[in-house]
View (tube, one colour):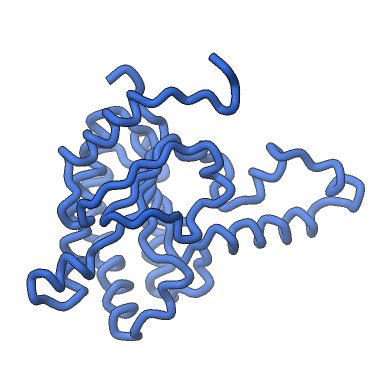
Length: 232
């Protein structure tokens, strides 16, 4: 491929429908979806993608049935412990971004430990967006900026200055955003950061999205002509 995106982000959608089609509870779809994350991370490492981010749990997802939310949080907790050796063996840095104040003490402790241990790794960075929403991100960035700047500095702030107040400060904006399961919307995800992102939509349900599908998305990206509003 002539062009490998530096940052690929994925809205993982379709776990519940995948499980329902097989006569199983929704949680089985989430469990199988973890395997898709692993497969896409392996492909990202192999292809030289520096950042792979996944939309794991939105702020709106807190409105789901309590049993499903608890199962998802436990799945994330267990998955982090299980994948630690894989991250270290493959030089993967792990990050979690979002409104972590809503997460349990145990889950936050596990996240902090995983992020600290993998911070020495210099290969692909896997970012889990957890309890995140784009509108929340912009609002909290505005509050940070207002609290740290004088009125004059706030008025003089440029677009590039605002980036450092977002939770993604220091992380390049996504070059490619993939959404699975045939849905054609952003669902309140990376609203600021995806202003010039290339979108790729597929009907494939997330548990069926593996290395071949990930590489198909990269190939489609390589065929795009990114002009950023300019004329070439």
